[in-house]
Image (cartoon, rainbow, N blue to C red):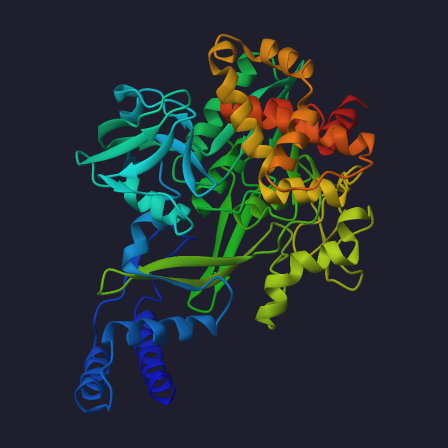
Length: 528
């Protein structure tokens, strides 16, 4: 521990010196990536590590010791400054890119097995004959199933350099023997707008999953398509959206605001205030707008919601957002790893920083859980404490800083029917597994149906009883008396899973939104 601490201190001083030299460079959240070059401090670090390696009583792993020192330093700063090992850097960066190189499947892990949920149209897997419902049980002639399989391991196995090949073994429903495919990896597009469709006459719905490097282009295409279908009001759903690139979200908000309206500004010790303002070029400045958020809407999602709220541009509906108001920039290290370092705070147009306190790191991680425990998710009263600092929108409405965006209208959770038995079904994965089995057994029939036909077909099936019987065989003991509301939830969840596996993400949201409490509240508000 003393040795690790000594290395940590030296590394910290060295990084501080290097970053100070960069203080005049503009940075935005996870976008402009710099490199920390080896400077005068590098010699001291190498000298100490080499000295330890030479004379220390035990053999050491110099690379591991250096990485542990960096992690220790960053953990003492804020919850969002982090170290990214070289082995993980490509996967981390790919998450917000518009494409990556792989085989072109969406998958889930079920019973320690890779289950192909969908196959990217025109992608490498579709070209060779991989189908939804296939189980990948071999990769490059080696068995690839079991408790040690993780999503990260699957991604590392299936993704790779464009043009390289991977051999997979498939277990297909109805066939006794494995089917083998050799797939040549290629560029796979990634979409961050999960769904957009006309939810009612004149009202377009857009679900944004994250703010990647091409999300603004996808978003504009969705808005324009809905406009052509007659939309003059838009619901932008940012629930569960954890954020992304700052320049992407400002580009998207620009579509709704008048010229020179302030969108967001950032400011840090080494980075003077920098503002983002609307250009006045947006095509949707006159259309009605609603933004949906919840406790998992963070960072760029909060910038979007805050800009709309502070400019009195539209309604913000949902539950208090996460509360992340820190700006990170990515810096490369000499060993091909990187750090994401907080370099500024962002502020909404009214001047509020919505970053919640992180003095106590343990409490910071548990803060969302505390909201549930304290009953905030089930109360329509204001989420932020009354003694929080008050700010004012352009029309003089009071808004609060210091812990997320509090919506204009709060919609509590729908907890009716969410019994302990239902929770057991969900946590065991039984409903999802059952839905996959249900679809496997009827895939030929269902594949010929359109969305309305599939929904009508599923509504006639005893989905709840099918799920309960399946779960009981898997060890989830059946309750003696299952409430009607619980049965409705089970049937609804089964239907959603079948539709998602059969028709994809957009169809899934169409089904979910039919009985979504927040969507129902929003549509009623828009009709008033």
